[in-house]
Length: 102
Image 1: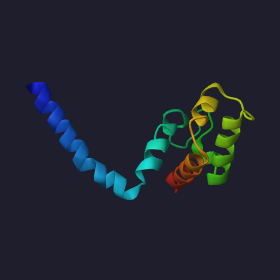
Image 2: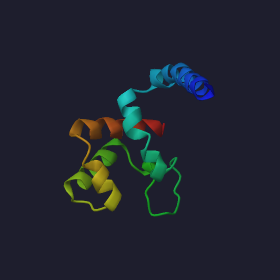
Image 3: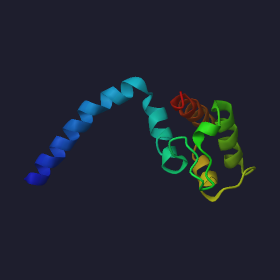
Image 4: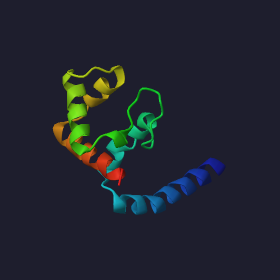
């Protein structure tokens, strides 16, 4: 019973909070782009060899993702991730990520 109440409360909180976030951002772009910050951080260089997203503009991000996807640029993780993105996904993701830096 307590699990049911907790899950219901959590769902309610998520439902209330989601429109505020989604009113500002396109859901697709938010879902595609949010995981990028797990490795690339908040924009400040981390010294871990992973470039900060803030070092790229939208065109640079799109070019890098397309290069990973084609195999022109090599990376164990990014190459595999980029394979899952269509050209439209890459353009939307790049624009959204670049917009987060403003």
